Image (cartoon, rainbow, N blue to C red; front, side, top):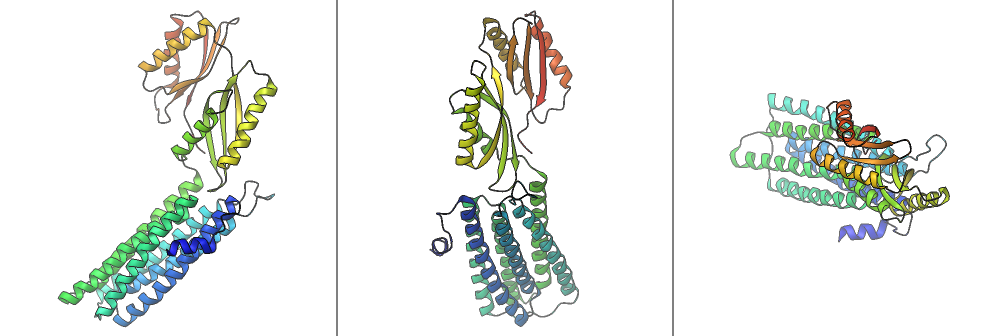
Length: 386
């Protein structure tokens, strides 16, 4: 119910996609800021009253979450800025940069808490445990459980790496605060003071999260393989257009969660005039931008009608491919009957580490045993990303 009220109050779904996405991000970030400030204040007060370093450490963890939410909020705000002369592809990657900056804040806080907890182990202080503290800690765990689910649902709505990271962080906070509660219970039941050790454990959670966030943010900024489902969706979308025979070499460039560019090689019959071929690809580029928000550039590969010889050669190639599991497929097949030349691209797996020239020579030798043609084979590794 709270989630529905927040969406209805702060998200205007009648705006353009980028604005709607920014509204979801702003609402989610502000919800996290308010929640974590309240949790920080409550835990810090209880920690100071009870003398528990583990609870103080956990409160500082919530304060770091406030910083995370603030940077995420700024990232969402910056990401919807339109393209300008200095940034022709927009500002969508600022969300990734904000996640990168937050990760270092988390690491710094984790390091400081690690030192404080170690000092508490060397010089232990009695912890004042009572029922009220336990109940309050239990309630704060419930808030973090809700926040973890809330962030994850919002991240799926707008495909946000930052909110997904916030969800994972909240989930780890549940584990961290649970260890603090366990420390209180053990101290209350046995009198054994493990407060410093629990503080170390909480600091470990924080440092682990920071390292994970650094890796994820760096991977995104450097450039990683796009979601396989996205590549499949692009293939399916383009192949549904009349006049398209096949496509390959789909490459996606990520300029932010709502700003992606792509290129693809699309096979179209060579019998079409240049005007008709242009109309086909122009319609594809226009429609995929409207439906999927992808700026697509298409390279046309003309495909001539098959003669009897070309059909025979393609059949032999398919049989050959069936025996060679390392070969992914062929594209841009053309046969020049007058010159007696066969041209095509041969694709190998991205992780292929063998001798490419050897693969080419082996295939040429196999084909020349049956056909008096010259074979020009361009061997390439399959790639989908930048």
